[in-house]
Length: 340
Ligand SMILES: Cc1cc2nc3c(=O)[nH]c(=O)nc-3n(C[C@H](O)[C@H](O)[C@H](O)COP(=O)(O)OP(=O)(O)OC[C@H]3O[C@@H](n4cnc5c(N)ncnc54)[C@H](O)[C@@H]3O)c2cc1C
Image 1 (cartoon, rainbow, N blue to C red):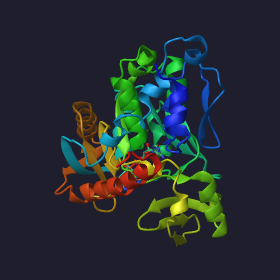
Image 2: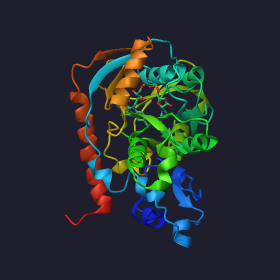
Image 3: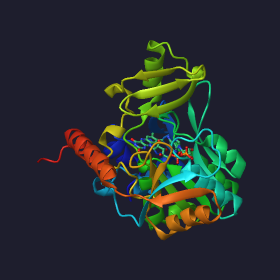
Image 4: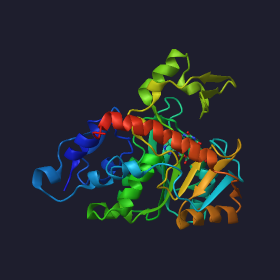
């Protein structure tokens, strides 16, 4: 059974780790952790030292085996332009993601949501499990900078034992990791598999490295605590609390190492995928991919939390997905090589 040593050799040492942190949360010995953005280990792996069957980390890493299949728009049941019917001041697009989860918590369809929060003064992100629908509204909005692994709260909430029906919001790599875990027959993963009910993935071109982003902001005389909102169009659009808007070019070195080989734009493994492209300003593009995803969207609609109209075309999503695939597949081959 393969353990962290193979994972280290095939993923970490090659610089293609996505930072999803599934390895960290499933390790029964809690021996894997992130140090300054990179996965590492306390070097106490039961599988390696005592020959105890495990391999949890290897079996759900999104950069192993299934990786090359995950691209394109993926299969979906419905495509919508959606917006929250309630006021969500921090929403990124139409607030549909928050509205779906708000409804799910309010109607007691789930127990908690594992999502990403961000410290207002430092822009450092953190993984958090939220159980209260109203509190959830504080965590709306996209965090484009990666600081800490996004899944660590999943382990905490499962160990706490009070959440049996968990929703997760994550980038495509997180969705791939969780889906792999849910499909795996490795018994080490059972306690996680039993508790995850819904997976919402955001469209993602890339995520930015924290240290490099802070340096870039500082070079442009921007202090994180002055920033009210960040958006990504062609450029990085920074809206400050004083009302000013600054547009900065997105330079190549901002990208988090590991993202350059990701080929999944649309979170093909999610139950629901959500993004801004494909819909007009003020709306979220929603792809429902599974009956579970459909159920949660429909419930939010029926309870008046969300308005959703069918999308006329998904061409632009396919175009973005294909561009990401072509660009990053090339980079992946440069790094990994396959003899062709
Ligand atoms: C790193 C990143 C890159 C993106 N790139 C694109 C893109 O290229 N094209 C595009 O169309 N859309 C992109 N999106 C998606 C877009 O920004 C919105 O998240 C999406 O349209 C949903 O909007 P909403 O208003 O419905 O979400 P909201 O209601 O505002 O909710 C957003 C949810 O996402 C969660 N979240 C925020 N940041 C993260 C994160 N880093 N990791 C995990 N969960 C997070 C929040 O906790 C919240 O639950 C990206 C999102 C992220 C996080």
